[in-house]
Image (cartoon, rainbow, N blue to C red; front, side, top):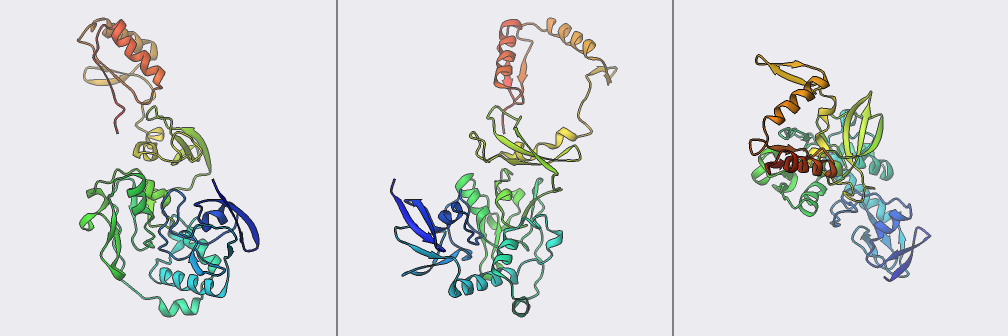
Length: 345
């Protein structure tokens, strides 16, 4: 593959054919402010924050401009600053300014861009206008959508389209009334959304946040236990409890992706209703018993149910090897092919 040599802010950079200026700068550790770009999504250039100046070409959007030999790029200039300043002011003018109550506070891309570009408070006060707050969409059981914090970057729309191929949401209405919503401005719960949460983890601001969000004290790398795919997870732990789950981008099987069970199905771990001892039903009530008594009862009932009166439902939380043993036991020991599996999303 052909490699191009260029300079960015006086730094020599080499990048393969097809690399954008933004990606080349990012890999070299040079920060170019951006809001709508994601490495795993096609660039669209809607935020205009990544504008740079290319010698002989003028101002360009770095997320959509491919590198070429001899290119001289400046990430800071008077023209670049003006474009970024106007674009930032248009975003902040309608944006919710109560950052302290936002779940993305200190981890917000808009905050980082604002610190880098700078905000002219008197000028912003003149263009900022009061408007009626739009209602929150809290219909989804796992995450909320706050349109007052949305910057219309389209990352959630593109994620649902390009990565998940679901197309549950899109831009609705026009002009200052533009909104991200389901078809016919339906709430999330009434769309074909699968609640995978991929849009939530990619949202650069606090528009999409998990319900009951709590910041973890540490992250623990592990493997999801819901099926045999081996998806990598980063479990957020706080005070001995799991408070969050995120995809592990270093995992070769899942590359940071998770389904709804992996991302939001961890609450059973700390549930007070989780069984900690065997229960046996006597006189219509479940009574706690010891493991020896429970296993003796299971063996007795299994002996009475040989053949087709017996059936097994295997668990997705077991390993593939354990499930193999289950089906072998069902067919060879119990003498039946009545076996099923719960690994269904």
